[in-house]
Structures are given as C-alpha cells and as structure tokens.
Length: 254
Image (cartoon, rainbow, N blue to C red; front, side, top):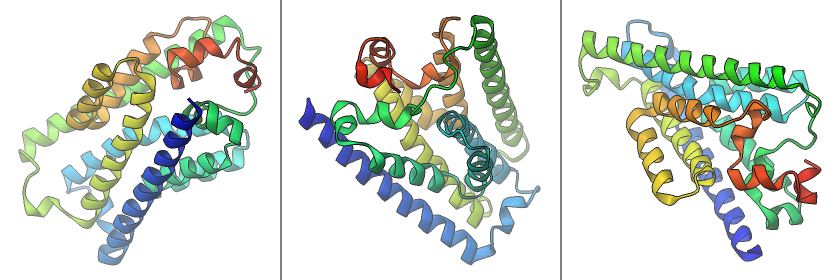
C-alpha cells in the first residue's frame, strides 16, 4: 500500500509539472503573437465559447481554493490570477500542495490530503446551512452549464462547425490547451472519485466530448449524492475517504 501511494505521488508530481510546462509555453505563445488581444474580440464567437468553457472548469477550482485557504487576500489574488493564467495556476497550486505533503500523508493517501483543508473551520454549521449551500452550489453549476450549452448552440447556428483557420487565433489555441489541461486535472479527480474504472472511463470520455458542460453535469450528479447532513466540500472526496474521516485519526485531524 505504501509503495503504491509513493508511486502515485511521484506520478502526480511528474504529470502536473509537465502540464505546467505545456500551458506556460501556450501562454507565452499568445503573449508573443498578439499580447492576448484576440481573447477580447467579441466578434470571434468560437473564441468566446472556448473562454466560457474554460471558465466552467476554473469555477470549481476557485471554489476549492476558497475552501482550502482561509486568507481573503490569497483568495482574491488567486481568483484574479487564475482567470488570466488558467490551468497554469491550477497545476502550479497542485504541485505546491503535493510537495508540501508530509511523509505520513504521502504514504496514506496523497490525493485526499491535497484536496482536504488543514483545519475544518465549519465543523459547527447547522443542517439548514449545509443543505442551503448544497442547493446554492447546484443552482450555480446548473446555470453555468446551461449558459455554456446555450452559447455553443448559438455559435453552431450562426457560424457552423468551428473547423476553419480563422477560428485558430493565438488566444483560441491557448484556450484549447488550457481546456485540455483542465480535462486532465479533472480526469485525475474523477478517477480518484469513482469506485469502478468503467464509470471513471465513461465520465472522462464525457469530459472529452462535452468539455465544460460535461463537468457541470458531473458536479450536479455528485452534489445530488450528498445528504443534508453533509457539507458541500464532501463532494471532493470519494466514498471511502468520507467514511474514514470519522474513524481514522490522521483523517480526523484534517
């Protein structure tokens, strides 16, 4: 078990460092080519669709960061930087958390300890507050998914399929790279979450095919599995970690 966890940790560090390098190269390419100006071209409808698609992935990451970090200064800075640098910030933050793990945490369950907050500041939240937070999260995620789906349908009806050279602006290329990097990030999370490899593969294929709309559907599905007694952040963990949190001393203190 310890050897397996150690191998997982090494693989995760290597994966996210490589992803950081890929998105850094894409960001540099965009800045050199047009200084990011094509990102704000409102006439480039498919570029705007891709930008909203990236936002669909970034929003859950921002929510996770708000849960992880207690400092409002860090939260605001992270939120600003991630909307400019996208998956580079996501991967950089994950790499930083992976290197912060203690030897005990690394051998126990590295993914869980990357996801979890060090101190539970909401242990005394009541049932109504918890349940209302779950409903609010569902509404927000559903709204993002519906807006994205509507924008995609509109772009198809106006411009047709986005497979022509004019669409591939520097910003669009970087957004595509950012989008695919986030697919990898969320695929790792889904593989950790799902109890069967069949389910994990199907959901990952759903992300590849439906992108941000797919992750919105997955989030709503996972939120629906939470009971009123559970807090929203329980969506981060697989069923085994949720059950062990009440009995494992190392997990309890987190």
